[in-house]
Length: 271
Image (cartoon, rainbow, N blue to C red; front, side):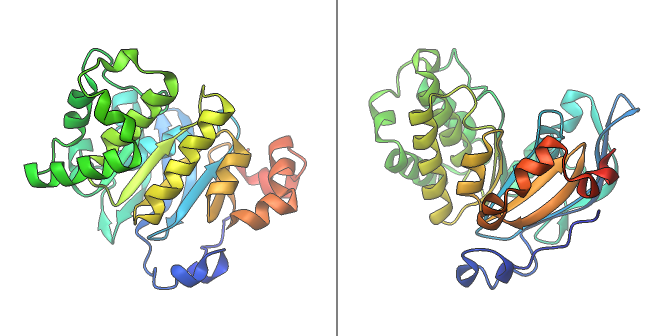
């Protein structure tokens, strides 16, 4: 099945997103392999409207992290290769750009597992996130980070390794925000967090989005992802098998059927 492109007026919150054509990010017929043989993505088509939160959900091994790596330019670092397809940011082809150039264009990824620089201080981690910006932009970004996370001001001189798991996740998000991205890629932001901390992270994601940053969210916690997203895309065996309004998909029970393999018509093309 080839998913139908979703117009801004086809999902919740459409009144604030009706001017979003063309999309901020457009992925067309993306195919990715590892080791030259294993196909991790198979003809993926996906659009991310400016100002939206697009949630990508799917079982383990569906290709969610590979999708993020493809967009951020880090795929090659993990032994992956784009076989065909195209990724556009605001109409510009970024399919095979270097990761640093992708950041300069306004896309930043917060990888799964946080991957902060544990031996560096909190302040040094934040400065690492601002390597593509001017000093003035860095100061403006830091003000935004401290508005989101006031506790960081008191921990700037501490080693990042001493932070709790939730604080490390928030530091990882803060580091990404230091480059003032227009598109934030979040890969499993709730992974390993207690439910109450995961909800705090979800609230931060909402605030980041309301402030104008578009978000592409990959999340194993389907309930959290659908609650956050305007649009939901379901990945199954490397293919996008559903794209739709996140609230409607959550209410329909369709996600559960797809995950359990009941909807054979939707998943047969992904085998």
